[in-house]
Amino acid sequence: MTEQMMLGKVVIVTGAGRGIGREVALQMASHGASVVVNDIGATISGEASADDPAEEVVAAIRAAGGEAIVSRDSVAEWHSASRIVEAAMDSFGRIDCVVNNAGILRDRIFHQMTFEEWEPVLRVHLFGSFNVSRAAAQHFRAQQSGAFVHMTSTSGLIGNVGQANYSAAKLGIVGLSKSIALDMGRYNVRSNCISPFAWSRMVGSIPSDSAEQAERLRKAQESLPPEAIAQMAVFLGSDAAASVTGQIFAVRRNEVFLMSQPRPVRSLHRAEGWTPNTLAAQLLPAFTPSFVPLDVGSTVFSWEPV
Image (cartoon, rainbow, N blue to C red; front, side, top):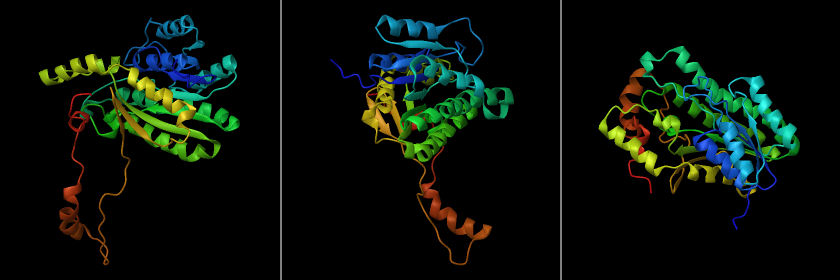
């Protein structure tokens, strides 16, 4: 029998009604966790929906003998996000792990993007990750333990076309996670990011501008199920990952990648100081070979999932 790595722990999973979040909630429960299944039941762009996927996930967990409750509060606002954490404390008496997975998309090429498309994406992804994490942090500090697992994306880590809002939010989450790891390490609190390659409603909504792009999306649907992402989330939330914090992992089917973080790659010194002219004359030829190209995720991860 597989060891239950989350036995006795309480986990919040946001955006847990469908896709990656759903699988994370189910896997956390199968490993013994009591789960707060948070999902407002919205469409991918964040509009209201009559669906109640969180209830379906809770029913599945309970049918398998696990413990779970529904939370329909939004992560995007401070007070409602705080109620998600309060629900965990009221129902289970503690909280051990937060998986910040909730997200929406409002893609648009940058020069056409409106503020109404920019702000909600930042509010759900970046503000939402802060709101839930900050509400949980006081409990983690008091009990001297806890784990945060945040979902980032290659759209932020590498880049993607037509996703300035999403990319900015996802790279912001990396900075948030690192700051939490630095600030709360003294309380045995860990914070890590997962960059998931998995089929989801959000991936399915990406426009297919070419036959090649349509074929890539078809292959993603067939070959990138969310189970592998959930396994990593369970590991990072468990005591087995007690020494892991401040890291970024990309997970693609059977592949796991430890992602780099910004560090100096070249240096140049001039005793007399710099002027715009000397920068143009000396910096450009010295640094240009090391400039990072304008890649997107598919050019960096150019091979088929293994």
